[in-house]
Image 1 (cartoon, rainbow, N blue to C red):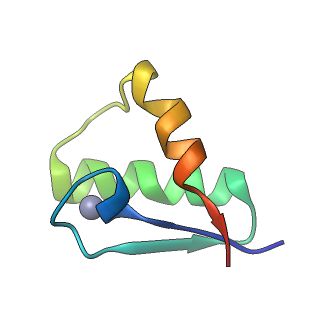
Image 2 (tube, rainbow, N blue to C red):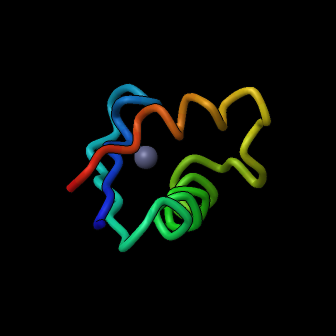
Length: 58
Ligand SMILES: [Zn+2]
């Protein structure tokens, strides 16, 4: 099932929406976006549950 995440749910002020065919793809793309646009070279472990909670069905 396609999934999506609104980066603004985690990073207030960001308008990016990341979509993928499943949770793993959304996580991978979100990590890439966070690195490129937010300077996060790694996702802090305590943030992962928040990222997962923010992932919605598309
Ligand atoms: Zn963002």
